Image 1 (cartoon, rainbow over the protein chains, first blue to last red):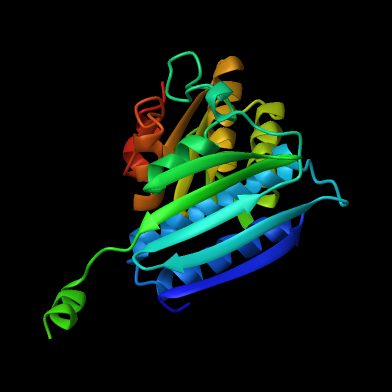
Image 2: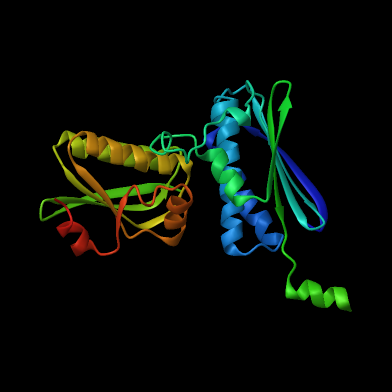
Length: 149
Length: 114
């Protein structure tokens, strides 16, 4: 992707889509100039958001799709994932770090997404939920040199 | 993409060598079935070697928690061995690192079972 660009996909509600989205996120984050550690975090955030969309949102319904887009806007990588499910209220998701939740088997996805991204927003769709993940591209020494010439 | 689990016995401890990805789907199922099988056979001391686990997602973390709880509920003990940096960091940020008994040395881990 170039400095101003957007690609969008409409994916089936399947585990294959989760894996595919994760791979695309890793590639796009690499092209955007993120280092390996940050790239891994972005790919994981996308994977977790896709799992929420496919599993909890669309509940593997073959009639429902997941809309995924990657946009590079200046120094930001913006990823949106929208499902067609029953909707999710992020305020109602229990804190997985609370002692009473620490040993629960599930409920860590949104926490991990927030841990790896700079900004996370939720928007209610009719029907479904859209999550927007934003990661700011760091200013490198090369950028500084280019800016000064 | 898949995960492999192989087991071996050393001094009364069942060591499960895991490799690949523990993620939603196949990876998590392999781990769940392996633990279920071992508990069914009466194994009480289980050491999960995660040295070759390249990646783990929230589903995989949940599966580790579930394995830990299942083994403990059967009166056994489960420990983790050789965490990669990625897995170590994930257990740190989810505050699970101190819940699990994590070891770096196989022999020391084996002798640490009660």
